Image: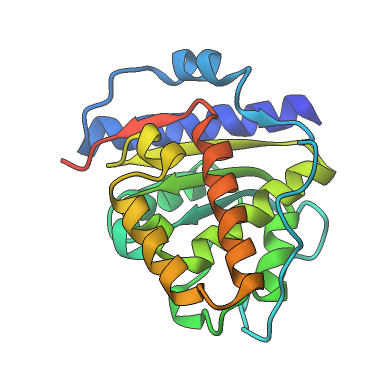
Length: 220
């Protein structure tokens, strides 16, 4: 199992590298990145899950049929990367024969994650998290991230962060644009104890993902 997952990771990194060579400035070859990520990329059974899985009546029209229906699940903020980096990434993954789940923002409804989306996360072997400037402003993205780490609690799987036009320290410490996003969340939910507890789980998930070795990409 681990050899097949490791092979998927290498292929994903090759896709990322090829994109970077075309549209950005990339400084490291995939094998060098892989060697640097080999110890930190796998999240292996945290002491406790970040929070409970959340479901809703929102509909997503792509239902996994098995426990490993997808090679990779990509969590990303559409308004930041849908028309640039992640668009290239999904195309590159498809050409490499990597089966990736992709949801559409137009079918996201309500405040919670749809059961089909939860199944897609649970049924993926590898997680790619594209952290961008507006990632933390999306409650959907934050709930996806919490669920990703919950999955890693029950079955250790690789998590690959990509810091797109944002510094890992910004994500880890929730500074700058991330601090402003959380100020808005806390202001919105300040009178709801349950929601405020969820906000704390979002912060913990961001600290966890920022502590994993990943790729930094500048939007130039």
